[in-house]
Image (cartoon, rainbow, N blue to C red):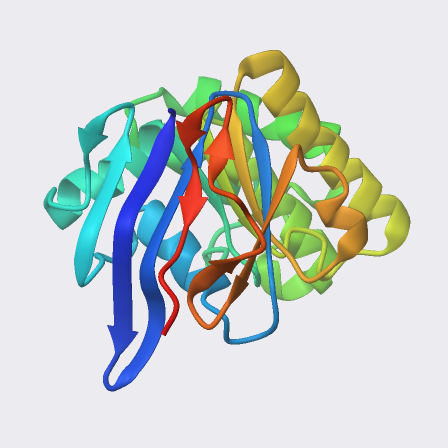
Length: 234
């Protein structure tokens, strides 16, 4: 498996968010994680991407445990192997679009000229090239989301985590964004984890995992004979 959780738990004070949840993604697979608000979807994404540490259980990437790495090493993974698209973009307010997109490349040691060229190319692909020199505050929510997607894709991630990737977009822009996510999976072997409320977005996935109260609902946990997704009931 490309990335997996094993019996992961996570609570916020007395409130449990994930309850012994196990989930695995294969290389090049698109998995949609759905469920009602507050069921643990975003928490699962943050735990799998190394933003949060689980309280118990394990997160493994290509067989190696990553939840016990230092924060610096987990951050490095998000610059090199993981791409993360947050629900509200989370662009750096002081940087224009092209520099926001180039930022992970620059932090990884790519020269400024090359990083800027790659960033401009991704802005072009996502239909927002004209925003290259605009600050996030000068963009609509949908424009910010496409710039944030360019930033998530510019490094050619092995795993892409997308939290409500089309939430701020109209239907045409949403189709463009989803087309790029599917293309990354099919042509680059990127594993894509989508967190979404939108059935149209979930339909792009190879598999849908529905959460309720921090556990997996309605999935038999088997994929090609391998353990894939389970959760303990409370």
